[in-house]
Figure 1 (cartoon, one colour):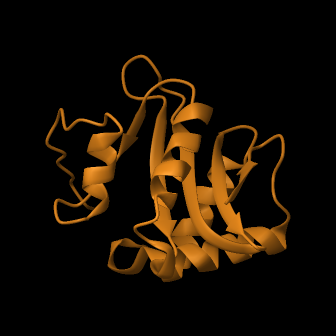
Figure 2 (cartoon, rainbow, N blue to C red):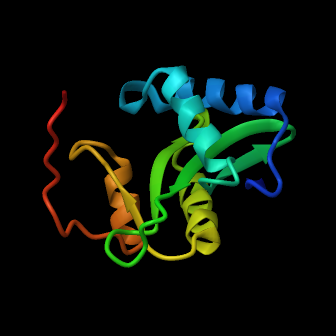
Length: 143
């Protein structure tokens, strides 16, 4: 697997970004969001004024996994980064691709990384094996 890193300094072109967002919509399945929201997170990550990065795993020119991380700009009192999306092609799961993508994201990130995961998401075990812990119960008010 080849890993590509897209940052504000080295952004992907608009066609590649569309391909990545379409991939994420498909492979996030029930844990996903509308493509509009995914594109917003990717645009944030690649905006020099905001920051973050997108990690993409490719095999033979085909995306097999992707990660979107946004820089919160709040390191010190909350984690510096939030992992917004990660997905692996359904036909490629169980081969360690998610772990490799997560490790690339961890290696690239400066400061801590927070993420949200539903209790029944199988990826929860991967995150725990990489050292993520559940320190808080998240509560939200939707308005």
